[in-house]
Image 1 (tube, helix red, strand yellow):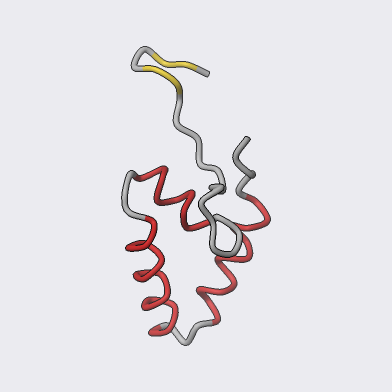
Image 2: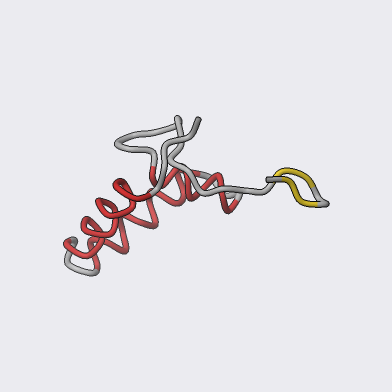
Length: 68
């Protein structure tokens, strides 16, 4: 779909991936550096005992579509 400003932005898993492309997809969607987002995500996951971060990543891996 296109809007007046151009093509509509979609959240997809990126081809610039380390595991599944989830974090790189979020980084592309929000126009930030993928490496920075990965570091922040790992730190937050470790500080929250790891499990919730892993669970959220797996859910996003399943439901966020692959980039075409």
